[in-house]
Length: 184
Image 1 (tube, rainbow, N blue to C red):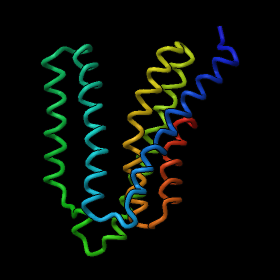
Image 2: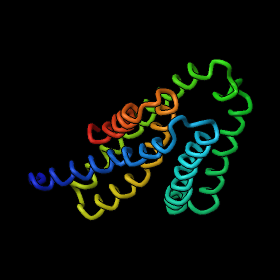
Image 3: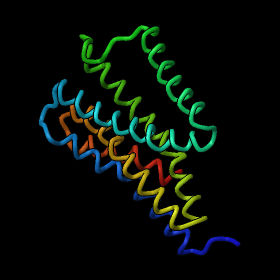
């Protein structure tokens, strides 16, 4: 049985609202005229912390249900160790340590925005498919993804605002990173 027109419309609306929650996060970029390194570190650290918390609380729970407590924790913490080793072994310079700060920040900002666009695309497919199958589960998933997308909006808008000083550009980039979700 194919879904009705109202079911499809509801699924599209849920997917769009979840994706555009990135624009809520973009508001954080507007608190300072010229965000300095401390503000950038705080907002980006907050964004990363929220996303790690979601991973820890939701994904780890699902892993425990799927493969068991000990294997899930071993896998989770092995991933942390692997990321730490990669960070230590690969040569890199942090953006704020570089003399070419603006060029490096511009590239990093573009890559973060592109990464979030790519990341949001399958989230849109998942939200739509889930909403078409079960409206209640679709609403719950859309809310969870919307909450998760707010720090993504911060991660995009704060560096754009720091580079350009334009709230409009920061909002636009954040908006565009969220638009990929309903496109998915």
